[in-house]
Image: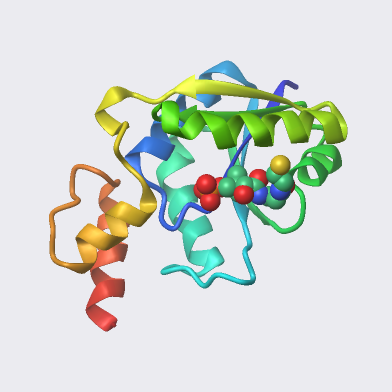
Length: 159
Ligand code: PNS
C-alpha cells in the first residue's frame, strides 16, 4: 500500500485543499488527511466538525481516511507507516516556510515531502480569508464545497 498524508488545520476545508487531496488520491493507494489539534488556538469549527466536513467531501474518492492528530506530524507518519507528506504550494510566499518544515521533517524521520502546485484558480485561497469574507457577508460559494458553505452560514448565524 502506498500511503501519503495531507496535513493541515482545515478550519474549514476549502476547494484548494480539496483539489490537492483529490490529486494525491490519484497518486497514492491511501491518502490520510491529518487534522492538527492546536490547543492554543480555538478555531471556528471544532475538530470533529472539521473531520465530518472533510469526510463528506472526500467520500467520493474512496481512498481517503480522515483523522485528527496532535504532536509531531512525523510521529503520525511513523505510527501509520506513511513515507510521504503531500502539500500544496500556492505561491512563492508559501515556499520558505514549507521548505523549512520539509527539511525538518526529513531530518527528524526521513519522511519525504512532495509539493503540488496549486490550481491557479485557488492560488489566493486560504481558510482564514474564507472565514473573514464569510463573516462580513461576502460570497464564498465558489471557494468551498456546498456542505462547507452551509456549515459556515449556520456557524456565522449563531455568533
Ligand atoms: O493548515 P496549516 O495550519 O497551514 O497546517 C500546518 C501543519 C499542520 C501542516 C503544520 O503546522 C504541522 O505539520 N504541524 C504539526 C506539528 C509539527 O510536526 N511541527 C514540526 C513541523 S517541522
